[in-house]
Length: 412
Image 1 (cartoon, helix red, strand yellow):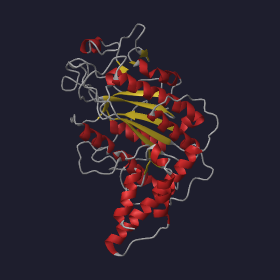
Image 2 (image 1 turned 90 degrees about the vertical axis):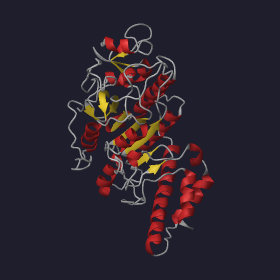
Image 3 (image 1 turned 180 degrees about the vertical axis):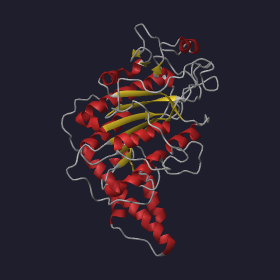
Image 4 (image 1 turned 30 degrees about the horizontal axis):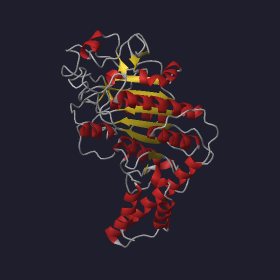
């Protein structure tokens, strides 16, 4: 079997692999260990409008800038107030109990210091955690896995619930990309995949042989982890009190919850959620963005409920490449902006408080007179996640050209 043929099978299954290097044995798993720290990243691709998610309802300037899109502070349809200054979009109502329980921590005015308004550049800069540096090609989460992985033999240590790995998980450390459900149900394809790589036969000598060896090893990793993943999600995990909505996001989160509860040692999981580029007809209570927010809020709330006591060791983070213009445009939407917001939910965070420094919406207070300023660098949040949640001491140079700072008050 040639290298090209094996790569064809990899492509057909949608099982993307970060690299050909395997720094841990793929046949071992944690024995009897449960409740390992887990990070779940939800990347809201397209540039989510932060101002209509965490609403500065006490700032009249917000209503002046958005005569048709601003969410009212009072009335039958209004924001859900968090404190005396900020509220969240009503479509996120399912998350309010977690705010009350101290498990939801929004971070405002967070983002990249780079001025780009290109989706592609901004996403690259955030996922590689290297704004402005185009030569970095290992994602920040892959760097963490590679550096910290020598003593972790978990088969399902990291995964992406999609056929293509997000850039944050690409790099030297092999990570499983889970194909769509129809591929997982294709027993013939999975059997052929396992037979193709299970014998461990290597290629010839020299450089081509080494490349063949790497493809075989990576293929074996994918075959084994896919089968293990499939077995976990097919196993009843006891009674589930959570009520998931009927959506693709909910299905993916439910599968992640099953892996976490299995005690397999999952540390990192990622899901992309597309559709946040709301240039036109963004919607106040109805429309594209409110529907997306409803799905995220309801799905994440069910996921956190499903986790039960595992929520104390699980951190869910939403992020987006940039925010949007403070002023609505002529198409009842918003354009590419600068500062955005993140939600951190679950174990360890100091919830029940809006974090970050609010810069204001005056013309002189906005970035370039039109956008939210960035007062918290996203790398500071990433560094805190690694240190506080994983107890990982971030080495010098981990964030190229940047020394991260702590985010005061974000952790208990």
